[in-house]
Image 1 (cartoon, helix red, strand yellow):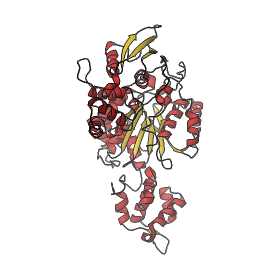
Image 2: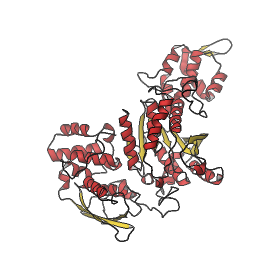
Image 3: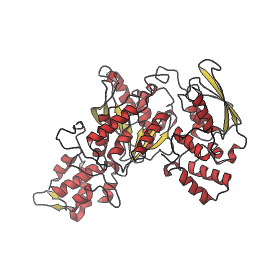
Image 4: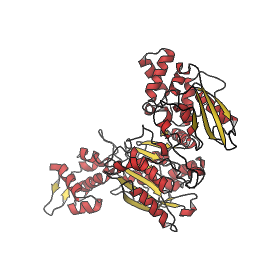
Length: 526
């Protein structure tokens, strides 16, 4: 029976509830199907798996031993962790969180034991502090919404031991879920460097860990995240292009193709139903089955054009989803936001650095056009390309060029690989040229070797660099790597680390110098 329940992955909750039902109150097969929304074939399979433990009375009611209740409501099991069942049914998803002083029972607290009142108060503090970029369509969800999402996900799915991936997370769903369930693995993939640093830092302050990875989803998903998730949550840009891209990358992140789910926040104005149809068509074009739409589940500070609200979609992949993904996402390097230069009305972004970031580049160009860079491309192209000289054309208002401190910060990160010269307002007031010259014998140091092998697996590259620079044995170098970086990074590429993590790792490998700024985070912080 345990193996059957385990095979259902995060969707095992209904099976466990049905077993607990029969271990508590006798029921007919019809009752079991109706009460727990189980397909008849699944209910019959469950009963067969019980074997001689299942008792059938003369009037046709079924019952299981009381031990089933204890086993399948437990918070953990030696072979498989379970999310606790706090009630016979999950919370009604249409209900809001109940005020702490209402006298009504509090929704299940998961493992953390945090009350609704404390959860909302903590999320309110985080929402007030989170960095925001209007060009990325950032609109903050309310603290109540973040808390309700976490509670609903915990009450609907078996999250204990599961891997939740948030594709974009300005709403801080990652932190809310960890506040409710400490035994879930949480990963965030986002293009916003400041947001990734904020989430990792706030998680660490609370004694939690969030794996944060940088990605411009138009160019792909970090390989370390692909096919790893049991559940994906996303609140994408509300355009057909944005919704399809974020859901498509989310599908690529799923490990469990049979039971995995994609949960999405999306809303459209009642005045523009045609836009809603376009977005829903984009969802269906991925061959995703829309399992549920919970109306006005999410509320926002802003987004008044859509009534400061959005619905919660639950999508399930089909066998054909995996066949159409590559085709649907092959032209994903497009504008998809509703504001700024990368909005649908902005200039086409082009392919950008997609080919340069995908894998080692054997034919390195002398000049690289990064005029569509929204911010993070410059550093990552400098890491990706190994050349004697490079000339990169970028926006004059690039965050790496905007002031002397920013320029010094970029120089410090790549100092072991390139020396940089900045030519602002060249060849026009809107553009700038960054000239990079390779550092002689830079690869002799561990940090230089690391920067020159940004496409390789971080654990292997760093170990080799330490052996080359310090003459360590492989075992000694492996032990040193374990001190420098967390386990989750070993199979990842340097290119996929958030910028704060790259800078901190570089500084940890670099001899102390007054030219190097203080790190914003320790290298070992996920």
